[in-house]
Amino acid sequence: MCEGHAGVDAAQAGGPVELDAVADELYGLPPGEFTAARDARAKAAQQSGDRGLAAEIRRLRRPTLAAWAGNLLVREQPDEVGPLLELGAEMRRAHRDLAGGQLRELSARQRQLVSALARQAQQLADRAGQRLGQAAQREVEGTLHAVLADPEAAEQWAQGRLTRALTAPTGFPAVTGTAPAPSTDHRTGQAADDRPRKSAASAKTGAKAGGRTGAKAGGKGSADRVTDLAAARARRERREEWRRAQRQAADAGDALHSREDALGTARQAAEDAEDRRHRAQQRIAELKGLLKDAGREEKDARAAQRKAGDRLRKAERATSEARRAADDATARAERLAGRLSSTDEAGRTGRTDH
Image 1 (cartoon, rainbow, N blue to C red):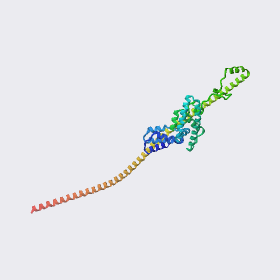
Image 2 (image 1 turned 135 degrees about the vertical axis):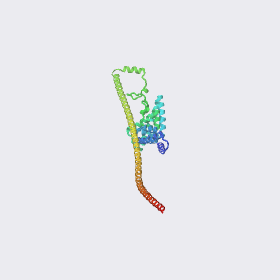
Image 3 (image 1 turned 180 degrees about the horizontal axis):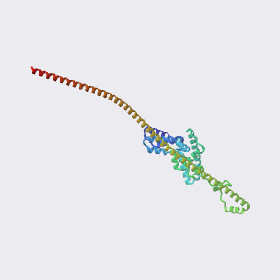
Image 4 (image 1 turned 90 degrees about the vertical axis):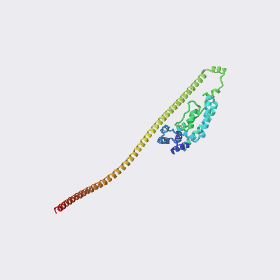
């Protein structure tokens, strides 16, 4: 569990993110914290540009309470994994070899080990603030029985990433915790295989007994057989009811996981929409800032335009005045030139007359 935290912390610090590191962290969390943490990791992976990893993280399913307790047992008590796996291998060999005596011995060890591990799982869950009810405790024990019976189940359990409790194959001795026993005579309590066989003489004596005694014995035997059949039928009905309940629980768990996945997808879509809205708001703020700057520039340009217009009008007036002054000066100079010419002409005429 610590390694999972370290892997994710390294990823958040800028290192590479791997699905195993994220899964190790998530399946070490209590079930109530799983979904929010999973969605946060998926969002972080998507924001970092790894959409494939984000999709894989979103597909991780929240474990049930019993599955989480089984995972917790693997994570917190790793030394207990090996002995249980070894016992399972021995029981499977004995079951294949039909070794009844060895199965009885192994079943006794199995009951002790499963009981001890189930108590440890309950204690670990209590320390983590999670209370296991009776149903969850039975599911933890069922997972341990499945580990004993099925090597694939053992491999799944050893990874510490179960999403729901495991069940052992039907008929394996570890499911009930009892080894196959020889059939028993219900009248004497003696094992059928241990009863001495009747000799031919005994058979003849029994045949001669006849009469009412034989009838009574036969009646009693028939009653016992009826009782046995009824008890067997009741056991079959209970087993079938249990199997139906298991299937219903599995279907309900699948439905829950589907709803959680849909919720995660909807939450991710909502977060994506929120991100887009946030980016749009930022863009609007940027555009508003640009518009405000453009407004200030337009105001400054308008003021500069007014000042330039004033200067232009002043320059135009000054030019007009200068033009008038120039025109007046030119006209005066022309008048003076005309007078000067008239005076010069008069002087020339007077000198001629003399």
